[in-house]
Image (cartoon, rainbow, N blue to C red; front, side):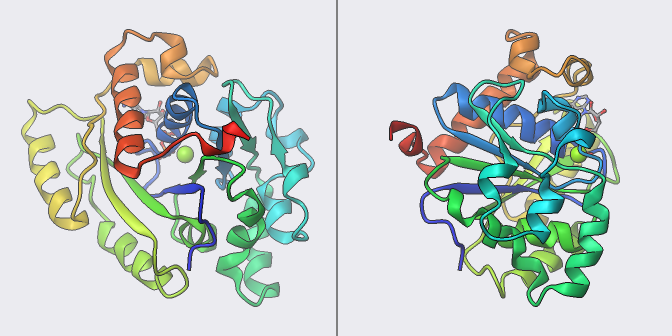
Length: 270
Ligand SMILES: Nc1ncnc2c1ncn2[C@@H]1O[C@H](COP(=O)(O)OP(=O)(O)O)[C@@H](O)[C@H]1O
Ligand SMILES: [Mg+2]
């Protein structure tokens, strides 16, 4: 069973690298927070790109990152959460290079190695409206931990590439395995990124993604050089240029998800 009754926990997962997981986590966090929701980003990637984007401190200087949280005691959460980030209303648990080693240690020393994150995040249920987990580009234990903690899964897919769905079956098989420990997790579907509906490859990929994942999220994200620019500037796309197409698309995606899941700002009212 999912440990979360009040908080929606998104795992943003795809073991392919460079598809737009981190970009989507950062800009959905921004969109949700603009809608008045209380948001926590959990960076489970050893490369810590979400932390470099959102964090005010360099990940190497953070004492309690996801690595320490995963291996530490159950009362560690409050010390792992940083409320000050580059996006107002978004809190962060940093990722770090140490996550690679933590993954090995979890495997060797924990009885239920896939369930550590869920256990550690459980006290956050009801404290945040939304938790977004940024996954590493692999299908190993860190991603298993994200999928086991999640209430909902989003799979970013690069739609402008003919290889965009390469490995999708492995991901789906992995999710099916995780259902043994998290039977209620919902697949929200593929999020098409770097999408251009005029291109044949995008159209083809869209129909295959629908068959593969069963669902496609109702907003597609187009290709834009603003994405890289925003990461370099440590800003959201909205903050960089609110009138840009890609900023608008991420805003729309957040409001669609809010509608689809009936998300309300419960946590913030307290
Ligand atoms: N919609 C987009 N348009 C153009 N470039 C993008 C877009 N989304 C992501 N990128 C770029 O692609 C690269 C990978 O994105 P990222 O979000 O880090 O992927 P992942 O987390 O899956 O590895 C980055 O350089 C990012 O700037
Ligand atoms: Mg990433």
